Image (cartoon, rainbow, N blue to C red; front, side):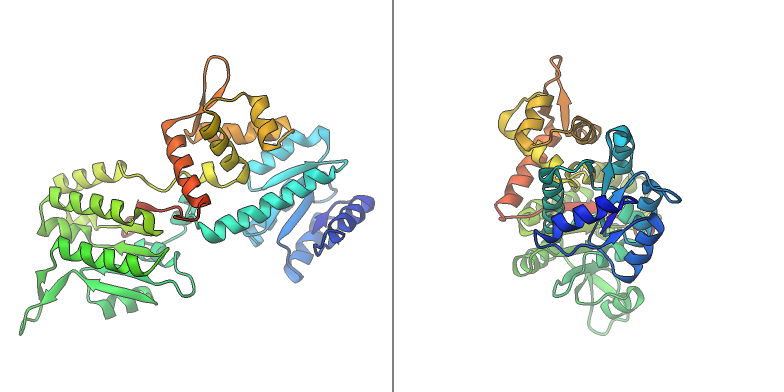
Length: 367
């Protein structure tokens, strides 16, 4: 959808896109855009910043509220570039300048298509996603997709936990077993047995979530060093299997010393790569470029990745610096930090399609 109060802009961009095989519709105000989006939908919206009644920034916020998955590219003139950069901070994917350059429009669309493909193949959970969820079970379910099975390891009877939390397409492992004739579960599974179960499951099922939701029970039944070694071994084993390991515990059932040890361990975990650093094809290209060249100037980076718009490039470099992925030396040359190098290594594996973004994550039982 192209949204601009200038008819010539809408008609011109519609024609350009239709000639290249895209379906394109137009709107001439923010209100008309929202109405058409409700009725017809759109994967990408080119949205002018300056419009009467409802300006582009206001429309952007409404679109993201109404249709979060829609990609928005701001249309800007030279005088509103700063506003376009601000729009990217609140949800716009990109911006293009008027008068349009065919290459700029084409690049923006190709970047969006690349991002859609990346998201489908390498699904990422952001901190904001976690905050929307009620507990570790909701987080666990958020990974579920058609045909993808999850593994839930808990101290609660499987039928009960599945019914209470609405778990479907899940394989359950009960960390305790009933002794013959006993009314309660008294025989805890050994850590080696649990590790074997998890490794067997992840070897047969790819790109799956594994939830261990009762770490407090495992810590009670084993020494802390044994549990720590168990988790570290698991992380190494499943790292290349496209698996997300989700850890959770009930702090109310733990001694202060146990809780402190667990919190210290969690803080050191190699968690999912910072979403802001990898949520844009431009930023991924910068990381991989610096991985190859080790050091590069602002101008050289822009030339290598095809970004001629200085404010746009500055925005992405600033994001990477804020995430601790890149740094600058005294000569203002950019290079990767240790975290950036680790990110580059994972991105290269993802490019080879041998493995995808995997990690070990901590989510409290009750958020």
